[in-house]
Image: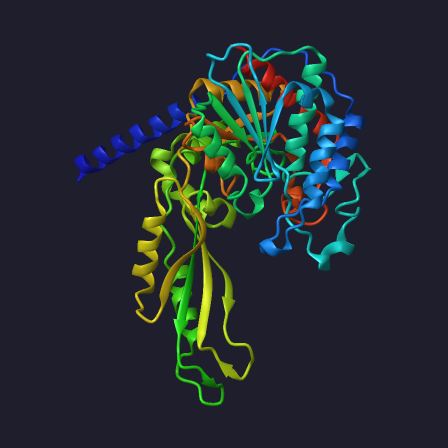
Length: 487
């Protein structure tokens, strides 16, 4: 017994020693940058340009019949009038009537090009929330240090940051060595099938193979990540897949005064409860593992010990993640029951009952895996399972240790010196997923600074972007183009 206890004590001592050593050597991995001279920006003028852009109601509605073309056409004219240098120096192709593909030809056509993405469309504003807006959502208002309006964050702020940067670079005589493609989709908010898909196919047919592609998706989180004081630049290196199914049950219908034991909706309710009670397995893998390794050194000691030793504490970290819906979504494929239909009246039994379930797929899994999971968990021949909508597989994880990630990290820190750059997985879907055939080097980042009170502004009420922050957005894109478009 004494020998056994001695062995246990020795093993414990070894574990403690490893934990202490790993914690002591768990230090920052941030690239060091020297101060640089950034392009000069008239913040007030740039903010007014953004405000005007937000006044165009370039709305993507779920029902194509609700699409209104005039605001998209007017927005295109506004870009041409406001950025004359850009529209003289770059060639413009209008794709499928509304999406815009600009080409800024480089001086060395042998160099692989760069692609920047953004989208001009926005989600509708719920009429019931209009009175909750501090400023009108399409008013084009600059007030209290912010530019207010639908699209300020998602994603006209990014689009306008790019065109402002290009116009200023041209004014300063900049000529890129690499060709730069700038693609502005018009239907990202409803899947990008009529915009980004077509532009990506055009570029692929032309043999375009960019050195990297940058889209929206990441942002600078300030005060959002518990335990980390510096702002965190969430550089998206992957995004989850998108997959939706309709569950349907057909029954005989009839009068509600003579119901069966289970109506069609009751059968579906049982099916979706099974799905919600049998979630996908969670796992801490790339890029979440690398994100934790990046942020751990900035956390309090107890958390630093845990994150420095995931080999020992991964179960604890996983449990903490699963306790919070946002964190849970980053380590497993999610299941969300979003819509249901039944009969047309309260006293009519439904003949056809349906429910819609949306899944966001973790890298490493596929839509086929999700479908197999649904069938196995529901296990009810009364329930018909049909794939609906536009599905996309999860993206590959871009190289976190490579040259492009390093280039983007340096550029971010040159404009935001106090920021910690960390790899991130984008939980939503962006237009970048349609370009995966062109390059493995796809990243997602737009340097809007968001605090805890701002996260609900995405597709929500009182969307806004700080005037000074927008000037930084312009400086970021100008700096990125200047350093990356050189051979």
